[in-house]
Length: 556
Image 1 (cartoon, one colour):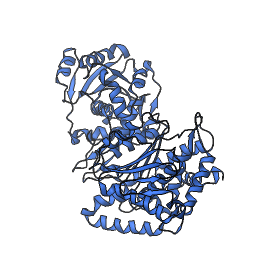
Image 2: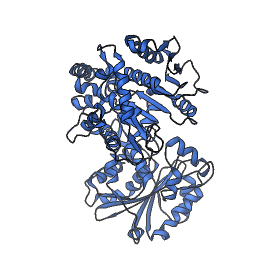
Image 3: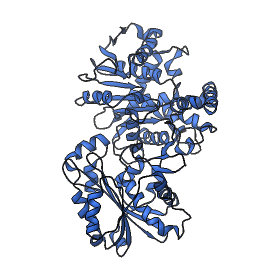
Image 4: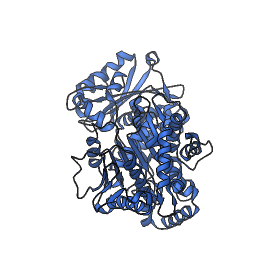
């Protein structure tokens, strides 16, 4: 069978359909990327028809325990896409597996554990002899669910039964002596394991340790795979949040990391506030509901109860809509694709003779410092932004945040200064050099008081007017709103800056009880110091803008 005739290919083509709103933006982006490979248009990857035919033969040998048909017939479309991408997408150079991480964000009752069991069985039947497989979960009960699902498929599949040995703590494929061991984070240590293939189930309830331990075990392996699966959980400090953030940066073209395959079944930002009435929220989080009316109607019933009863809302939104809900609303700030439309090539001559306002966000240790320079010309806000980070923590931060800081330094987006902490003296000298370097008049410097007193004193001694900007929602709401409006209207321009784009992607907004929105550092998905610096500068600039073309009221 040709790949173009496969259910995976047809599903991916359906996903990218122009008028198809039943899948979210990130699923569309992943489908588009994979189709480029499947169509033979990728320089370093291809989809192996030989591997695909093998997968098909094996799925025909497995019996679906609930549908009494072969797994080939009973597997869901999205699962076909996941399986085909993971097992059949290969590197042209050496025919090894192209994807090393597979990420599935999906709501409850979409057969994620069952499909994980299918993936494990396929791996056990295709991987090299003596390979070791592990699953990790928050506790033994959850860890056992995957083992039980694997066991169930083996027991109902006559072609498999005699080739597997099922024990309480291990499942062994006798054909190639591959062992699968379920691990519970609450009971088992993760270090010292050598995992050819591993799966983190319900990763939204895990911190980063199990995933880091599994990945560390694979460093020397040439053909490794890690699978991370979860619904949303009502906390914003888990490994799933981090992995989703990395995947989104990859899909948005902000991070060059092609070995990640991510199916993120979550509603688009524009839909999330309409969760009470808009059925697209259900469809985008629940791919099974698209083709199964019974599942769709069952989720509708749950939605009705969540609308009526506040105490049911968190569970419904997290588990059935993949929307993080913790009372106060948290939402993405600005669609990164709309931000990128405002990018322009650097032109130093543009700034000569301009009056500019600076925004400053100081920090220390593993945080970044940012300086933003803003001006207004013909109704357009122009920005140039720089970042600063400690030199000795450069590699550590790059690994932790998934950001190639050395590349960004080479591009002029940021500077390494100081050793373990940022050298504020370097930042101060940099600010004072801007007037001469760009030929600008610095009108004011807006700053957050935190860690800034000493720096502000030195800047004021050098003749700059510094204005404290209270980091309160009532103060930050107007420039936060204005910046978003400027981006959406394309009346915002910034010099080409990958790090600023990453910061915009990370930014999350919180709404207070008075409906004032502001970028919340603690609730954001990574560093946002550059965006904060832009907002601080815009707070100072807006007074002039307000009396021009912008209908906006300052709040203090």
